[in-house]
Length: 225
Image 1 (cartoon, rainbow, N blue to C red):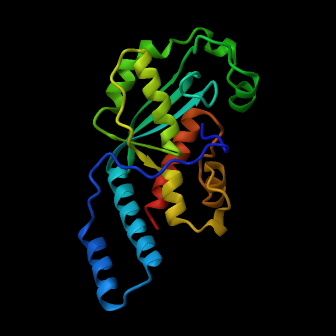
Image 2: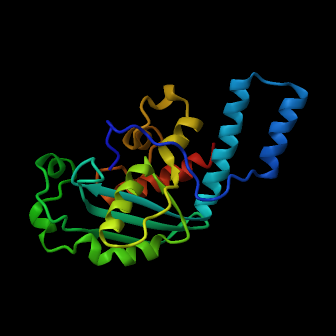
Image 3: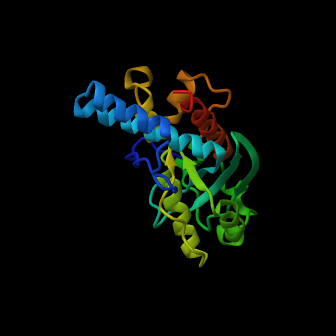
């Protein structure tokens, strides 16, 4: 879930911010031969760094999407999660699970996700699967569209389950899209807008696996810029 009202988080990386030789060479030669203005140089640096992070994520990461009972990570709960493990540009494993949040699912969330209280009643609580979720994620960069939202909710659920919280770092495809795709092409950088403009095979539907797979398509599309 990446609500339109959310402020999009910054672009993070769980790895050190290393530069490929080709990117470094491009920046240095640009400054030496024909110095651009500072804003143009910053844009070039951001694009180079972002593409470097995307390439790393495609090689070794986990795409995450969560659906929740609301927007407050302190008070609301995760009701569905999808995790897609990436290796060398391919999905090699998945973990998809609904959760009983232990509270009533607001009607606005039912309308948005088409999940119901009845559908969640017999599902496990997050704490029952917390160790499995943590194991699936450990050692990998998390990728998501407004990934700070997903990481914030996951960390709160891990704290409730007496598990170690995640590092607060990941690769945000919303932030990456802002750097690589001109605004006039997409308008707002919502996942649904990007899926339509870039003609994804999977369209986001406010369900965890669909949205995670749409994010995977976005990550691949961004790598071509």
